[in-house]
Image (cartoon, rainbow, N blue to C red):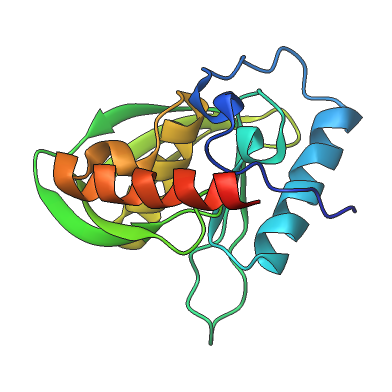
Length: 169
């Protein structure tokens, strides 16, 4: 396993729609393992392939509490097939937008269809933090960032600071 460099905003790759994975082979399995290692090292609770410079529909997540054993999810071509009408608001951050957070309103429960690393089609029902995390990561696959859900004022404030930091590098 290898730690991969994180892609940071304003990299345009983060705004691209990721390509579906045609074949789950050793390259994809290695990507999944590398992404998990990178996510844990960051540390974070989710990571999408575009965040490590790969524009494919692959995500990893682990939303287990710190005092619990890991609950690693590896998903290829995840797709939300249903959403609850009920919503909840959670504070979100992003490894590609370090040091910034915002309150995002999302459906409280989602059902996701995906393939695991063996190529088996699976379905998960997610609630709470796991639901927010899987929606956040699938958004990455569609070129959407959590800041897109914030008020214009909050979003503009974050982006002004990010652009100023970027110019300073």
